[in-house]
Image 1 (cartoon, one colour):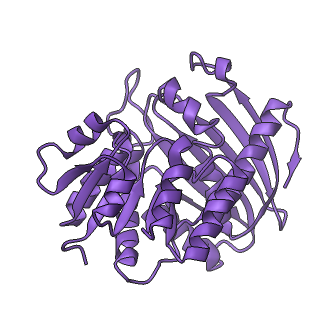
Image 2 (cartoon, helix red, strand yellow):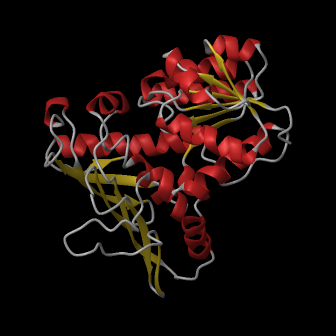
Length: 330
């Protein structure tokens, strides 16, 4: 499958570097690095014989490209993904596809009309623990689902420059949790109530964002979900999900020590998304490239409709938080 396959990595920052490392582990692939900052692309390609550099997406496509991973800034997704799908290149774009509902739908329908595979990077679908939680819930092991609890807390706040480009904490970090609620239950979210504070993140209030947020959502069958997210969790990256049902509870999340050492950071905790979801990212890339090479698509894949629905909920949560925790019907 991989021999001779050319894969573009469009966006050569931290996430792009992570994907390039996964490609090296899964390969051999010929990886072409593309970035608006050529020096950054050259740095990612430096010292690795299977990696080369292209000046632009146009150069990447003209040189022959079998699949592309878009990891550039969210504000550039629409242009980059549009160019790739117009060229017929199967594309996996980091979430969100865009932070505008109309543009998300336009890109998705365009890909469908052209018959070009377009995946969105909801890597949590490929996490073994979360996938098992979903399967056991769907099998009726818990009976009637009564409540979901989801937690997503970063170790430290990303740079303000990145946050200005990725939308609010709701459309960036908590977007995964809105997607998880839908994915774990197979239900539609019909109402969101949210609140937020800027407690530790210097400069967040100036851009109208938060570092600590909560949201309560109602599903179309009456089930509730309680979500929390934060930018500052120095004891370790913390992503968990729990499903409570009439027959019992199931949870997935931390697989290392739950409690930090007294007065110090517990180094056994996860350091970040690349650490916590290493297996998920790699399995997502494996499945995407297998599909791009002509294999069947997996039901675990996140698509543009998943990004659209999660964004719809995230934008509603943002409106709720900024208007005093007002319930927003969807």
